[in-house]
Each structure stands twice: as structure tokens, then as C-alpha cells.
Image (cartoon, rainbow, N blue to C red; front, side, top):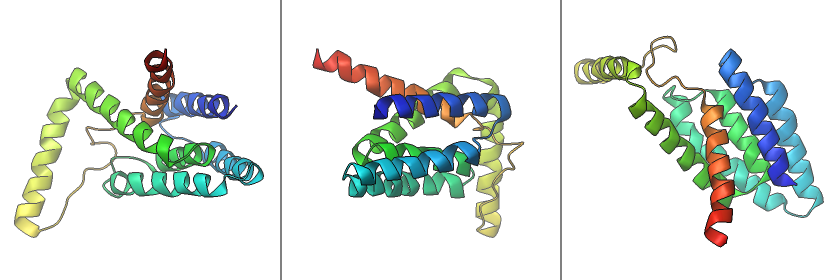
Length: 164
């Protein structure tokens, strides 16, 4: 049942992220609360809290560096509420690998990435400050919920392939 809930939430969030470039709080907060309630009811509250806390800590760096939005962070935390740290950790890293693969296969972002890295390095070497690009100039502005959905599907179906 939990996989069906997580898949549904990720599919809806991916659709919103593709269409509006934002994962609404109206999706993430109720799913997070329902997941915590479900885990509490089933006696697995510590597992859910570890999933939520782990998702928060994994995404803290990318959010601070503007590589990921807070809606993406809350979405992964909601997934953590329905699953556990053991599922959130590989899900996060598989989604990052998918993002990097997409970056390599999407050459239009290479010029922006080079320019942004140059500005960051100049700001650091001249002023010891990180000058991060605005959201409109970032090279790594991807609909993260789509990659999270892809990583979830990869994990879910690869478990069937490796166990059979």
C-alpha cells in the first residue's frame, strides 16, 4: 500500500513540477502528515521520523545552494514519512544520478553551467563569497520531482529484477 501512495504522490508532484515548476504545499504537507499518522498507527513512528529527518538533512545542502527548491525538499520528506531512511537515502542519490545524466544529455545547459561556475569562482577568489545565480539563470533548473519519480520507479522495478 505504501508504494502505491508514494507512487501516486510522486506522479502528481511530477506533473505539477513539469507544468508549473513548483511542488505545491497542498500536496506535500497533507501527505507528510498522513504518512506520519499512518506510521504512528502502525507502530513505526521512529522509522518514519528517521525518513523525514534523513530527507531533510540530505536536501539541506542543495536547498541552501539553490540547487533544489524547498518544495522538492518537502516532497522527499513526505516520501520519508511513508517509507524509511533505508528507502530515502538510495532514492535521493538515484535521483541525483538521473539529474546528472540528464545534464550530460542536455547540451543547452552546458554554457550556462560554465558561466555560473565562472561567476562563482570569481566571486570566491575576489571576495570570498559565493555568488549564486538567480533561479532564472541557473543551469541546473530541472523539475526534480520528475527525477525523483524516475528514481522511485527504478528502485521499485529493479528490486523485482534482482530478486527473481
